[in-house]
Length: 381
Ligand SMILES: Cc1ncc(COP(=O)(O)O)c(C=O)c1O
Image (cartoon, rainbow, N blue to C red):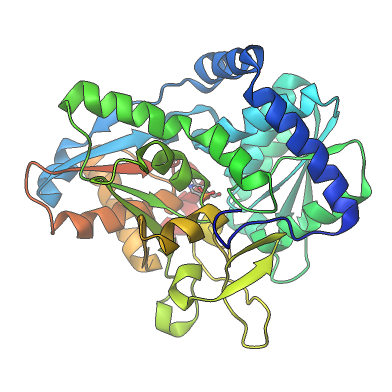
């Protein structure tokens, strides 16, 4: 548990599966052989360490020093592969032969499909019908890598519904490992995803100390469920002078209710087996989120983020669709880097935040993914 947040709010049947995962996760944390294998894959297959790129033109535009943690350069184009490799190796060690996963933007689906192909595991990806349309190139990629993509039509056919479908499937199939893609869900998932993503922050800290000989003033990351954000924050949480910003999607505006900012409505609920902040539907349930970005279209937030907010360690704020689209175009023009639409929410916020900084201050933006998958969406917006 993270304070009052997190937990394992699941049926007895699902608890049996989760207990098996917890037990094995505790074992691999102590196993140097597992760590070596994982880090070898991160180096040779994923291409880590990802660079910490000094973005001079964006910095000049903003009026302070901006560094980009280039998760977009990872194999399959986003941070999701760090976690996919880790969990797939764990599944293999547990003797599982069939991996299932949910995906919104398709980044996690592609990362999982890729890890499964490489490790010779059967792969099934659940994806909302709406997201399959928005992120069509990634559907084709997953299929090419041998994954079966199952269209989810329940609810409003997005990420939330794909997660529900995956948990139902896990419950009914013993040979299956559910490789969750964000820092959400019942224990041990949020902790496990943080464990496999914290490499982002560990590298960034080493890199900024080597380059600048000091820590950054601020770190900004976008938040869907919260895996890239917790990945870069994790190693800086005890460095109290480093400001941490988690940026949710404000959609068409927080006041319109057409958004995905769980933090903005201060409502604690239980969904997907965890207690955290979720968008209220007015009847005690959780309403659907809205975001132009498929990867941020989640009505809740991971429990560690809820906790970090409750102790005032991380500030959570939001950016509207249109601001993110402008940041997407700006970064492309200024730096020749086309960011994922999700990452563009962090870029847009950093540009605003820079106005409160001096020219020698340092902001690190976690560039969680690349934007090839979003070109049609942006060009038609
Ligand atoms: C590139 C990219 N960034 C960020 C996210 C948001 O997920 P999370 O909050 O787990 O990092 C996604 C989700 O699909 C994504 O594809």
